[in-house]
Image (tube, rainbow, N blue to C red; front, side, top):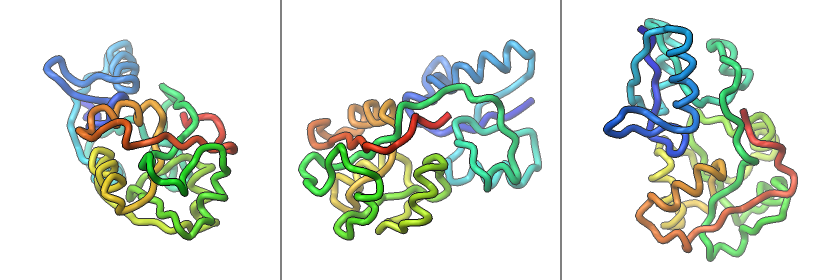
Length: 194
């Protein structure tokens, strides 16, 4: 039996009375069933999932992780099951230093802005490379997105990267007013990650 590790990340994967569902988990579930491969879902914090895969001590599979050169050293990837819309940033609506239509470089080079970045996460090759080269102000966290939006709300950082699909769901489910946030679209972000 293969264990598929996931964490709550609507709309990609969520759990409820009928099991795990979402725009990434549904195609994965269908693929396992069509291939007649036994599997089970296990809710595992994102921060532990890569360590489990690196350990290679059991039959484990992760869902929804972007392909990058570091991960390819220890992981095998399936053909992609979903492609995001272009990545956006989520910021407070009253943060006037954050506005749509600018380049990623303009935002990264602004010393008045701080990126909230999740440990171990890849934002796709393009954004990861820009972070590595331009080294924007940043705060690292192990928190899930629901906590990250609260950190933005309390002004502990200015923005974090997220897919537009996920941002829509997050602003509704956060318990905060949706109108307190805005979606920042960049003028030079490529197509969404696969």
